[in-house]
Length: 176
Image: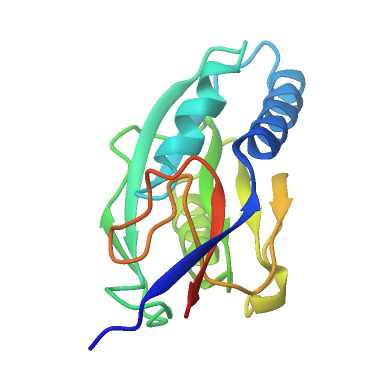
């Protein structure tokens, strides 16, 4: 028997929108006159990345990667693999990784090292949400939206077993 779940809003769509706009302004300023490759980490980034790209004034190229570390549970397995690498050549390019949430740091640290090995001209990280209380590996987030508590979060692209991604707010998933 499954335990019923309840959602509690942590950040509203308006609060998230303000954070995305702030990050877009910073990216526009920092990449003025350049054309970075934005590499979104799927699946969680797709809502955030779509909103972010629409606010950018600088030209960008878009690519995606799929990484795996969670499976079907609420806790990372700790084993990370690149399921789908970016298709675009990034050697000598400015690369900006777009991530929904930085949690333990294990997955994004692994991916940043993977991308560094491809010799980009620059490599930065843009994350909408950061959960520093769970950090196991140090990570520098160059463009950060909002810091979140150590709760299981869903909505605005984040899921639990492929559910709740569609929610416009960021919510805490609680067991009743």
